[in-house]
Image (cartoon, rainbow, N blue to C red):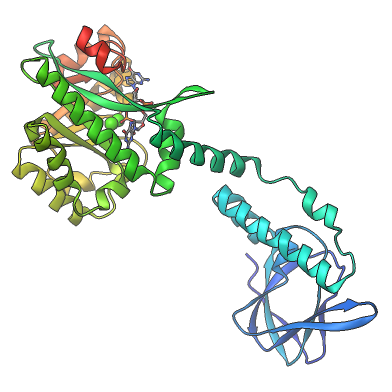
Length: 385
Ligand code: C2E
Ligand code: CA
Ligand code: CA
């Protein structure tokens, strides 16, 4: 990162209209005048002072300088390298990047229109294609909003087996998008997108209500004992102070016992432990269980288990797959011991083979979920089985 300063005396030219941009500047002190030639006459467009950026537009869109910058007083400028700007732009949300590029393009077009000259032609400006990632993302987001209104989101149920008894004790609710053109779109593709906006809140509510409808239907069909359904919750849903009361409202409306709904919270979704602790205490007061999802993934640490009183730990898919190695067996055995010590039930996800299932049984893991037990299916398929 460049950190040296460049000094200019009053009257010095900092850069000239038409130059290729070497870098942008942060004005540390002094005042700078920006101007542009129009039919042989210089027009002053404005003055910039300490704390402001200078010359960043040409760096952002990698085009020639549209203005000349001149020091009005002694100035100290900190150069900002092209790499500093382009790396940040590359790492930014593609939609934010597209919004910025749109503004820069419009700025150049207006400047060319109102001050004449042709540092860029109208055609150059309008011909630049928009960022394909951003267009794809913004289109998908728009379609997802419509999908929610048109009932294109469907909740599937994946069975969770109690290993010792071999019975299906419950299900995990997994949402799918039945896209009119693309067919089934998996949540890995659209949940992250919904989480980036507030769209996850109505989607989450929709899933919760559908799950309560499903529990109601299972009860009406006299499924005994009534299986539980576990629902995934995202951080934005957890922020809502009335979340648990709303869930209880859905359950009571259908005369369902709260202990048949389980909440799954992934470690990556826990931002305010004190808030989650209050939410969990309220859940426990009505008998609703809360699971720590995706245990052992990403930047996972034991922090949440130290402070939060989870009822279940869900082992990420990778651990079941690691059971074909002695080290994997030792690690899952140690996690099973830890879960027992904390009075937590252990659920292994991604169980695909009989061997994995048998090892989990020997290690004392309570529940298994995975393709060996069953794939995610519709409620109709559950009722028909
Ligand atoms: P998750 O909560 O970890 O869900 C388990 C994922 O593992 C599911 O993927 C499931 O289909 C998959 N899986 C199940 N059994 C096996 C197996 O034997 N082998 C392998 N390799 N995979 C298996 P899916 O349905 O694509 O869901 C992906 C993620 O999307 C979920 O991960 C969850 O984080 C999120 N998600 C799904 N539905 C919802 C929802 O309603 N709300 C929220 N907030 N997130 C959801
Ligand atoms: Ca889950
Ligand atoms: Ca999981």
